[in-house]
Amino acid sequence: MGADAAPATPVLEVENLSLSFGGIRALNGVSFAVQPGSITSVIGPNGAGKTSLFNSISGFYKSTGTVRVDGKPIDHLHPPERAKLGLARSFQNIALFRGMTVLDNIKLGRHAHMKTGLLDALFYFGRARREEVELRREVEERIIDFLEIDHIRKAPVASLPYGLQKRVELARALAMRPRLLMLDEPVAGMNREETEDMARFILDVREEWGVPVLMVEHDMGMVMDISDHVVVLNFGQMIAQGTPREVQANPEVAAAYLGTGDVADLRRRVAAETRLPETREVA
Amino acid sequence: MRIATAKETYAADEALFDTAVQRVWFAILLAALALFPFLADQYWLFLAGLAAINVISVTGLNILTGYTGLVSLGQAAFMGVGAYTVAVMEARLGTPVLLNLLGGGLVAAGVGMVFGLPSLRVKGLYLAIATIAASFILHFVFANWTSVTRGVSGINVPPAAFFGMALDTPFKLYWLIMPITVLLLLGAANLFRTRVGRAFIAVRDRDISAEVLGIPLLRTKLTSFALASFYAGVAGGLWAYFFRVVTPESFPLLLSIFLLAAIIVGGMGTILGGILGAVFMTLVPEFLKLLVGFVTPVWPDAAVHLSPVRTVVFGAMIVGFLIFEPQGLAEMWRRTRRFFHLWPFKT
Ligand SMILES: Nc1ncnc2c1ncn2[C@@H]1O[C@H](COP(=O)(O)OP(=O)(O)OP(=O)(O)O)[C@@H](O)[C@H]1O
Ligand SMILES: [Mg+2]
Image 1: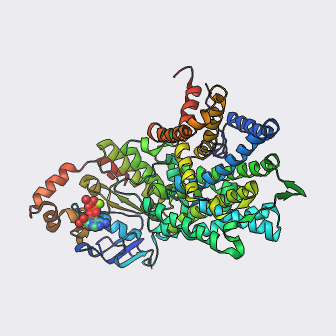
Image 2: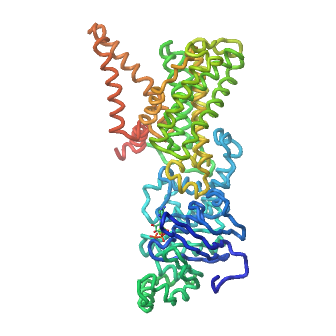
Image 3: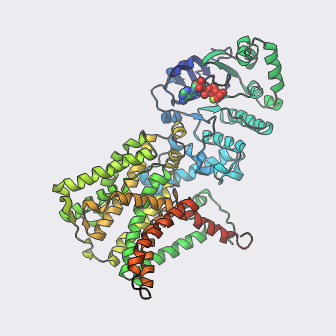
């Protein structure tokens, strides 16, 4: 457990998680927890197993070990049931539905919480109409306004630039009634300004929605800036965890990233990449 | 050009026909459909009935293949299930028409779900092959379960009776077929305003992430199969009343291919596409026949020489669509509409 572990029940607990693909050990006995209201980041070199970790938590990969949400084991649950519990996520390679508008993509996130059945849907009477209009209002007022995507709500997602697509993915995750927001590389491929916007949204989600965040990210500047807790993976193994400061000071982490033990160099590189001073105040 | 309309409520923005102009057009269309039987002769009423039956079946297939991304070559066989169910209910039990049609739809839906089970494991071409199995197995059942289906001789279906009146002409049947077609089309359009339709599209676009986002794959795919087969079953039931005899050869694999071609020509994954595709596939061969008829007075041998050409022309038109308008007739319609909305500012 990290130094910042609180006595409250963690939102997510991962215990001794292991996963193999043929001969590759993608995850090897990984254990950590996400505390309520925190931003936890998972970092590690390419191929370290970060996405595999997310997919295991989502139930898409069948791993061994235990995953608990709010103290309850969820290992027997299928992915859709885990989604319903509030494990809301975005994907490393944007996974929007190209045949739908922005609005429909976002609405889709609420699927598991809606009750409209086939007959209701065919007649679009009573429950179907009520649920759809209610959902529309909530999506408009709580999500679209919040993420500043009013201007594209009716646009087909395929026509949007990359940065906006990532934002729509965040919107869809928010529509899932998140208990935990899991973001796989939310700012990969973004320019500086887009990165700052995204960092601000992530912090705002935590503040305004009270939703903790678990995030995989390669942008060290952003990770060190907004995380409360950092978990470091290398070759499927957790080699360190702690506050951003502790992790930065850890020689093993530096070695994993550089292939050498040159800690000073890593510190310099992290310092050079560190930006977003303004977001620290917001946090 | 059309003036932009501002909407006051979310409910208004979620409406099926969201502008007054659209509602007026829809009313005009309904009026035209209601007037048509009084203006058309037997031949055109026959074609209208056949086209409407095909529209229902194609719309069902469009839900499955166009919207959910599950390619099926079993649609005709599921029409057969509906047709036989209706034939048996009508000829043996004498139950009311609407109940028979509902029965045909439900039995077909059940059978469709069973044959949809492989869709959890296979997709694309492999699923298409798996659904061909439905065609063969069901044909075998139709031909050999003689105590129910009377084997190869088939079942003669008495005319549908509605409040004591026998619906035995295309004119009378029109009033049964057309309202059902309109209702089923509205149902399909409604579907895609709700979570059920969104789940279908999500499964088509990315089934793996859809699951992680809370959409149960098996359930969604089977729902789509059930619905597509329900539409096929009702269409098959109407077919039984329309042709009044059902045999194992009534619903061949070729018909499934015809239905699949209709959604491709019309436009996959749009309700309008299913309608246009079915009408096109039903009527164009007839138009070509008429065309041959026109030249017969000047060229008496036309029928002999042009009939094979007719088939080739029809085939060439389908290929032309695949190459030049892969999005189908629905996309051509949208482009035309856009042109008039923007005209004369942008052409
Ligand atoms: N579906 C799969 N089948 C086989 N091997 C896989 C699969 N998914 C991941 N792997 C392997 O597991 C290891 C971890 O991959 P993973 O995608 O989790 O890394 P990552 O930390 O997310 O990397 P990146 O930073 O590049 O996104 C890699 O060696 C990868 O090749
Ligand atoms: Mg990854």
